[in-house]
Length: 312
Length: 285
Image (tube, rainbow over all chains, first blue to last red; front, side, top):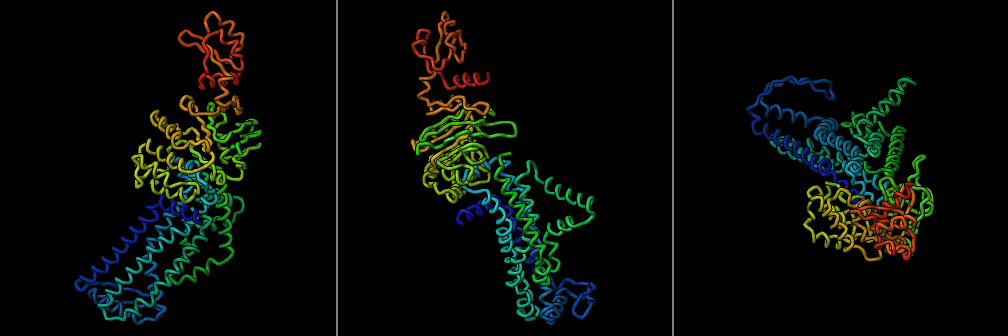
């Protein structure tokens, strides 16, 4: 267990930019936009006039607002109207808002994970430092496992912490600005947002997405453990060949659909604003089991290749 | 146990090509063995087999166990440096210490820190900020602070200039060698390690062509600077190697009694480099 801890720390040391600095910078940028955006409107709100027709989907069908007023009073009326809605409606709307603020972070995480996995078993073969790593009493399985855990648990955990910080910023800033409009802050912003539940949902979302997309992530790892040059050609090439073969010989779309569904978390995330339960409904089936099995097979392959791996 | 490595019929094939063909040798505890051979002779295959880095046929025992049980088991008692200076560039010195301390039970952090204190390397520096010589010092300090039974060095000084190569071997001898640990060094820069070695293994085309302790070498091999008028007589004794330099002919004889050789001219113990050329030429015939 102790050994695994140091192996995980090693991964963070090597990838500090993607795993530490980048999420902090992205979160800080998002926080900056939230604070400066709301703050600027707060200060200059009564000198800005808004002219717009807004269609809004509510429980009572489509409603239309004709807006022609100063920003301040538009927000004031909007907030009051929002405060008067049902709890479920408030929760759904705020859910969407909190998801939207964490979107830049989750997108960054996905890209960081991809580049991390592609390079993780390739870079040290290329710069020959594999000769040093292999001189240590660390098994190939432990090495590969540390990469899997880093990508699927450690990195999402770090990004989650940044999302949490961002949510707190949003909650505080919106609270401060709502206080000027005479609406009950708790029942309007705090209770329906329920950010602590949101965090648990995000954590389980990251885990479920990690398992759902395991074939893709493990495929990257497998290519990384074997490829002799920039692994990109392999990553795209083989799935493409498989899809082509399927199209030519069987005239079905199973492979194509499976690949398409399991590359990006977005494929199971449409209903995320309605709560994590909808995502679970989508993925809790045999297809998830299949994903995990395929992923494990690829990981096993990566361990075997790692055992034979040498400097490039 | 006085044998550290025992190879019995060690064979490594790549398809039809045999990188190692039924090789037998023994490495005694406390010896410093030079594994010497031209490129492609089977040096790396031998070392990789010992380290559990590759599959092989035949019998091989390293510290009483079969390296096929897995590299990570071997590495608990064996250390290797394949080319110094392959430390990852992003690694901080302090991180390297943390890492090895975390994964290797035999690592003494105090020893490594004491060794590093004598250099200009600071714990906060990254490998990429160090000069090539400093990376060598760091790598050595790390590896030499691990207490193991066998140290394997595979062309350790390749790519280093002469100054660092000498410093490397000096440090190796001074800081490490205590007659408890055995060392295998493979290289083709024979001259540099000649004085270090206690045992020689010449390997060529997958076969061991010489297996001798340095002490026995003087008994087995003799170099004679032959007087010009006695050249024909010398040829009659079947030299394994002849060489002409500055008008003098010198010949190397194997297992020829000194009483036959003394009348021919001046006797020397041949240098390892000359012996290497002699044995390899013979094997090539």
